[in-house]
Length: 134
Image (cartoon, rainbow, N blue to C red; front, top):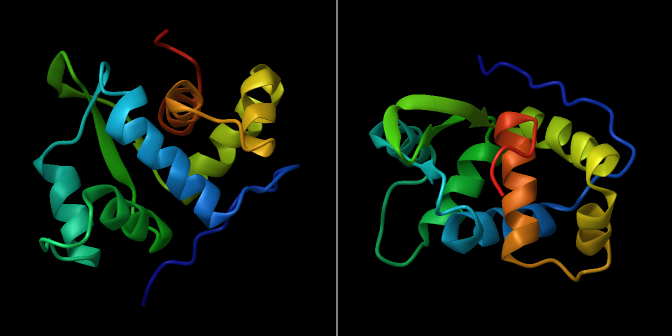
């Protein structure tokens, strides 16, 4: 039986589409300088949505996250170091921290004025619970 995930209460809950777009901004550009997805992440993602030629990696990654998976995020400079894991729980926790500590970036999300930098900040809070890089 699948474990039920209890998500933390947050003041503002972003939509799946917004979260998917932020993940895409981070994975495909904003965060490339600090993160690495290893074979362990690939296996977790493929356990939910098998690799095919038509579905983008970030779409499959988001599907795995929505399915309750935790995906390890590694350090780009030392692939043996896991910086954290991204999951629905970590995303909710990270969004609350981002709202509290980086309200300007969070306002960009709400105002649909987000970019690769916003995605990077969102991803760092979701993975590491802090703005570590940049």
